[in-house]
Structures are given as structure tokens and as C-alpha cells.
Length: 339
Image (cartoon, rainbow, N blue to C red; front, side):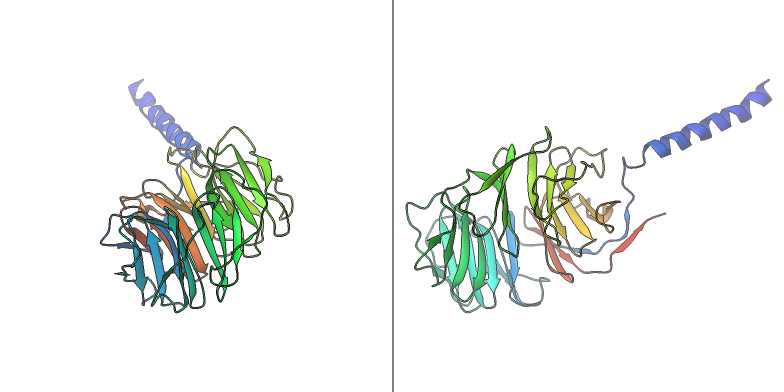
């Protein structure tokens, strides 16, 4: 009887392994074959906030603790720059350039402007009646920029910051995240993630929208085609189905349901290739518009939360983390999992 049971036990074990493997499909993501990101550990423990390039080689990086860094080699190396502002410790939250005309916004209330690519910076005075604090600045041309505050006030200057025009009549409330599309549209997530708001140039006020389900919103932004994407608590994401209907959404999906880390940011390199960052060095990618996902395991040992991913074009991208960690896109990603 023992000689008969032994082969049966082997068959049962093989069946159990097959069932377990099938059940893990979608639970643990397959890994990327090649990692296209170079890890750069800066000599800083600052949390990095934003990055902007004047051209493919020359750019600037900002963050907490008055962090302002300049690169002349496409982001491979960075040099700290000191601003003659005051003894205040600032957290620079946003930087943007249009040609050599650039702006930096931060907390507590600070707005800087350069007209010469950063060789010199001017501290732009802000009104004490400014609703909220500077949150995001977008350079639009010579001496021209839009400034959005952390309560959704939006202002436009066309004379280097001497005069400002209010673009909306009322603030939207404290926001967690905000993003501006290239066509001037905005989307903002409320501070507690309970709802989101949109604004289109020409509208007098922000338009509020209820979230899709019980999952609180973490972040939102625009895809290449102008539709929205959203990240919610618990590693959930959704994609908009219309560039004009901000409440038409795909079914929620969890790319890797086995993980407990949150999704923090998302960016498209191409219309079909997108990257999503998370806590504890987690980085996932899709090469088919979000249908299937792969995990960049080579990054998982980087001791930082990956707060922001930003592609300046298809060939140049960066991921910003805390404790001075920066990832630079080097290309050559293989969209095939390891066998």
C-alpha cells in the first residue's frame, strides 16, 4: 500500500503547488527584466519636492531644508546653491522653468524668480492677504507664471511678480495634492482625501466631485490624452474614461494586492508606459496602459519612500524621495518579466 500512496502524495503536492501558484497571479507582481533607473544618493537628508530642466543638461532640484541644487550633466551630479534670502528654514515645494525664466515656491510663504537660468534669484514679495501658502508655480513665458496656493487660489503674473491677477473667485480648501495639465486645467485632492476638485481656464470657481468609493484619495493627475488618473488608499488606482467628464471612471484595480504599502504618485513616459511610486522603495510599471504590471525589484532596497515621479520628456525622467535619494531614468527598460 505504501508504494501506491507515495506517487499519490507526489501528485497531491504538485496539484497544491499549481493551485498556489495560480492563486498568486496578480498577488505578487513579476519583476522587470532590466532596471532603467540609476540611484543617486545626494549628500543631504532633505525630502526632495520638485525638479525642472532648462535643457537636457542644465536643471534644478528643490526640497526641504532650503535645498536648491543645480546640475549641468543631465542630473548625474548635483551642486548645492545658497540663496541670500534670510535665516528662515524653507521647504521649497515647486520649481518651474520656461527657457531661462524660472520660479521657485515654498513654505513658509516664499516665491523666487530668475530671468537668467538661476545665475541670480529675486525674492518676490507676497501679500499678507494671500489665501493660503504658495504650493505650486508654473512658468509660462518671460516674466509670466501661474501661482497656486495650498487652498486652491490661483494667480497669474505677466510682469515678473509685480502684479497678480486672480484666476478664481474663491479658494477650494486645503489640498493634499494638486496638478496642472499643459492646457491649463487643474485637479486637486482635498486634504483628507474625501473629494477632488477640478478647474478649467475660464471657470469662475473650482468644481467639486465626490470620490468613487470608500477609499480615500491619495493623489490625482492627467494622462497624456487629458483624462484623469487617481490613486487611492490601499494601493488602488483608477483611470478616467473621458477628458471632459471628470466623473467617468474605469473599474478600480489593485496592481499588487499582496502589498500593504501605499501608492504615492504616477507619471506617463509614453501614452502606454506609466510608472507608479510607493512607500519603502516600491516602484511598478505598466507598458500597456495599465492592463498588466511589473515590479522593479532592483529599487526595492533603496531606503526611502518614493514620493514623486516626473518625466520631462520620453528620454528624461526622475523619481524624488526622502533623505536625499533621487532616481534618474537611463532608458533601456525591458517590458518582459523574468522567467
